[in-house]
Image 1: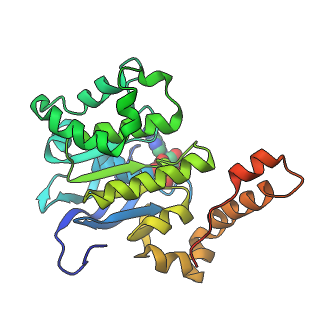
Image 2 (image 1 turned 60 degrees about the vertical axis):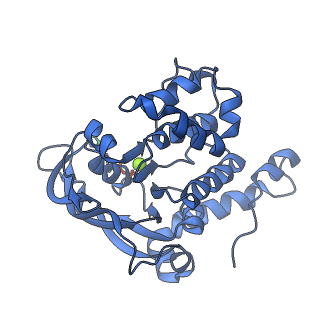
Length: 274
Ligand SMILES: Nc1ncnc2c1ncn2[C@@H]1O[C@H](COP(=O)(O)OP(=O)(O)O)[C@@H](O)[C@H]1O
Ligand SMILES: [Mg+2]
């Protein structure tokens, strides 16, 4: 974990106001900070504006107030290609690979602005995702959801981003694949990559996040370390209640002895932190 008092700020949003339709703001003054080496979690109910926050940072939503800074430079409202060149890597929730291209071609696309860097960056990404290298000539469209997620992260990492934005990397994956994905995200972060991760799976997210924000109606309603927030009864009751109990409830139901044994084992939760 980074020393929050001295580490440099990589990404900061200040009182961000943004929306899609005229007169309707989805973000209502959202402020977050990610410092060098941070793994920041963004959680909150469906429709709170989590994806919109990442899209606003990545130049895909009109910003009506506030701003975005990358390493102290104002990047508010820049378009995605300029942001990528400046070091913002984004992995959207859906449609995040080119299905008709091979794994290797997808990774090359991540470097379209600087093809000369390919060898060096490919080695970095290959070390993180060795299973992708073995299958580099396979079309991305033939991969499973979890594998596509890895290709998408790998592609974003090709540019050696200053900050990596991940929108619900575990969405739609089986419990086992979800666990793998969270471990992968933590591993990428352990190599020094600053990460801002939006997640619906609040408990898992808080388990690996250094710090997290609860987004509520487009505002950062609450922040703390992942551990503090996991154990804060007020946060659980006000913001995580349904999310946290949903996950636990599903896990409990799935591990009832009457359930099909194979399915029960697969869905069994790993030991929770105390
Ligand atoms: N392209 C869009 N056009 C209009 N409204 C949108 C669009 N995308 C999202 N919204 C609205 O913005 C709100 C927040 O959505 P989103 O940021 O996707 O929430 P979250 O990711 O937290 O579930 C929702 O009310 C949603 O309907
Ligand atoms: Mg979303």
